Amino acid sequence: MNKIDNVLKFIYQGDKVELQAEKIELANVKDLPKKLKSILDSQKKLDKSVPAYEKLGQEIKDQKGMLNMYVGDAESLLNDINTKAKDLGVDPNSFDGYKQLSIEVSNSKSEYLK
Image 1 (cartoon, helix red, strand yellow):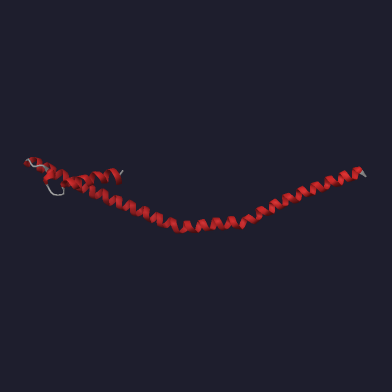
Image 2 (cartoon, helix red, strand yellow; image 1 turned 120 degrees about the vertical axis):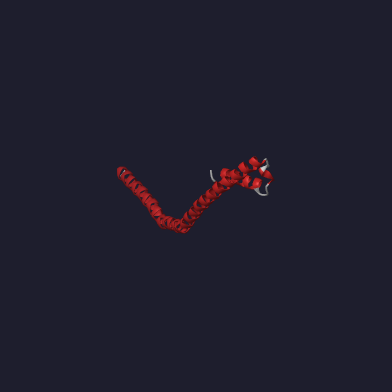
């Protein structure tokens, strides 16, 4: 009888372990809808955010292009005024706006047009 008890005890313990494993698997299956909802929610947010981000990126690119053009024009103007002022023996900084434009050209090149 002792052997039979040991065998039954062994079988009973084995079944118990299998049931625990099945409970773990079922617990994991319950997480599937939650994970799916999380993924779908994130995708929905990205669907709204990405186009706005891409549009903003294009606007930044366009504005940098315009700024680059304006800076080039301003540099040409500053160089022309500087050359003519030196020919006349006049300090170009004495002209209204010359110094400020020169500063803004420098700021634009160092901060926005890197």
